[in-house]
Every structure is written in structure tokens, then in C-alpha cells.
Image (cartoon, rainbow, N blue to C red; front, side, top):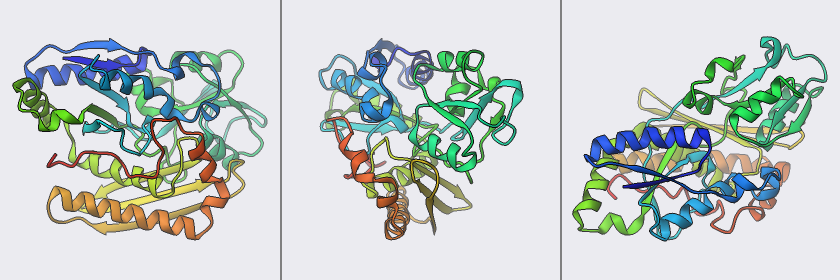
Length: 337
């Protein structure tokens, strides 16, 4: 099997982990095939490129063309709309969904000196930093994890990164503070991976395809699929793009699904938060349907409270890549499929 991945250290690390598990489950070798995307070569800001969906386009084109058999994405990098001809067939168990601060002198958000330079390429993190510490000098940055970490010893006082990414390349020890999801909700789907295949494989009778589907079912983690479905549905119902300053968190606790989301004004001066919960019962599909319903209530409350005007969500969709917007649902295959 040929597994498509971006060539960055993080992408290869997380793809190799999935490849090893897939090979074991399928009893077949899995080869990594690297694909270069515009996001890897264009050094402009992510917001100006159209958000993180820019990383997925080249990979998906390779899958549609039959150059690879399966893809591994960071789920937060995918637009919520389904991509024609492709299906997210497996969502492995989620890693830590939190953001982390990596700072000089073991500083935290509260102890950074006044006017400290903090780097991030995320509009959400920019808004959160400015909401918490309006005195900070927030700098737009790009580059892989090693490049960003290196800048902390060079021209920046700190950077904000995803805990999952640092963990996957064994650099979580660099973090000086783990940021609590309560005040600092992360991107919808952060910490989770998506394994994508051609939709035609779902109905194929070829033994190799049946073998692949059976292996992917073993990798799928139902609680993770449930929570990321809810988070991505909030984004979809808000009709917001990847460049919108939105954080969302869903957790399952004793058969209770809790979904919370926050929309920020880009300068961090205002934000709106909504939370709803529901008891989970019935089949896997019933639970997914309930997750979508709860997420819909969260999004509806945010919109009623002026979230769309606060963050100009419509314009964040207009900057999305051509492969899809965020208005058509989470694009995840159901367990039955």
C-alpha cells in the first residue's frame, strides 16, 4: 500500500506511525510517498493562502489520481466540506488537543515580560494571546516545528504550538506551559489524525480493498470520531473557514457529550462562547447524530449572539482553497460505511 504524506518531519512521523499500525492490521507492507503542497513551498502567511486547507489539496489530488492508496492528514488541516470522490475512513485515537507555550527562561503566558515577542501563524492563537496579554508583540510566523523552536533562541521570546505535534517528534519537553482548554480552546480536530481513501473503495469487492477497509476499521477510535465530528460540525454550521479565529472542544464524560466553542474578534478584544451537552445512547450512528445536533445548538447560539459579525466569518470562507468550503458538514464516513 502507498500512503501519501507531506514531507515535513512532523507529517512523516505521524504518517509512519499510522503506516506501521496499518501494515500490522492488514498484514501488508506500507510505503510512504511524499507529496509537496503549496503550503510547503509558499512562505506567505497561512491566512493569506486561505488557511490550513492549503496543505491538503496536493495530497488529495494525488489520491484521486491513484498515485497513492491512502492519505494521513492532521484533521485540523482539512476543510469540513466533503471532497468529491474521497472519504475519511478512519480516525485513530486522538493525542493531546492542547496548545503549548515554548518560551525563553521557562516563562508562562502570565510571566512573559511586557512587550515580549510571541510567534504564531494562527489567527485563533493571535486573538487568544491578545485577549490574555494585550501588551504582547504577536508576530506572524511560518515554518516547521524545528524552525519555530529555533526562533525562540533567536528573535522571539516564545512561540505557541500544538502539544500533539511536539509529542509526535519527541519534543514535548521543550514546552514551558500547557495551555488549559477551558480558557484556551484549540482548533476543531486538533490532535487528531484523519486517514482518507477513495470513496470507491467502500463498495469495492476487490480483496485488497476489503483488506484495507478491515485494517482501517481496527484503527478507528469511536470516542475520537465522536468528539472531532462535533467540533468540526460547529465550524461547518458557523460557515467559517480555517482562517477564522475559532476554538472548539468536545469531550465525552460518563456518556455525556460536552461541546463548547469560542469565536474571537481578531484583536482579542471580544469573544463569544457557547456550550451545550447531551446524553449519548443507542447505536454508533445515533451517537454521531446526537453529536451533530449538539454542535448545531452551539453554533446557533454563537450566531444569535453576533459571532458572525464579531469575526467576519463569511470572509474566512471566501479565502478557502478551491477544494471546498466549510458549509457542508464534517465529511466523515459513518461507522456503517
